[in-house]
Image (tube, rainbow, N blue to C red; front, side, top):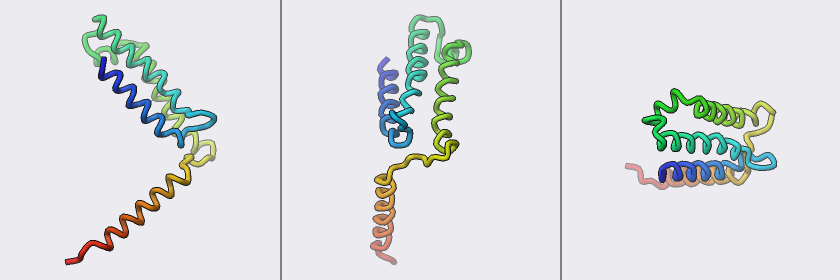
Length: 117
C-alpha cells in the first residue's frame, strides 16, 4: 500500500515537472494519471482480495487492468507526438534553454581551468 502511494506521488511530481511541455489550457499530462491511478488501485484491490495471487497474473488475465494500461499508453504516446504532429514546437520555455546554455558554458569553463599534465 505504501509503495503504491509513493508511486502515485512520484508520478504526480513528474507530471507537474513536465507542465511546461504539455500545457494547452492546463497540463494535459494530468490526463494520464487517471488510468494510472485506476490500474494501480485495481491491482492493489484484486491482489488484496485474493482474486489474483500476484500482479503478473493480474496483468495477463484481468481485462479492465489491461484496458487501463492501453489507455495510459495511448494517452502518453498521443501527448508526446501531438506537439510535433500539429506543427508546434515541443513547448520548451526559453528559461530552460537559457539554463542549459549556462550549464554548457560553465562546463566549458571548468574544462579550460583543469591543469594539463
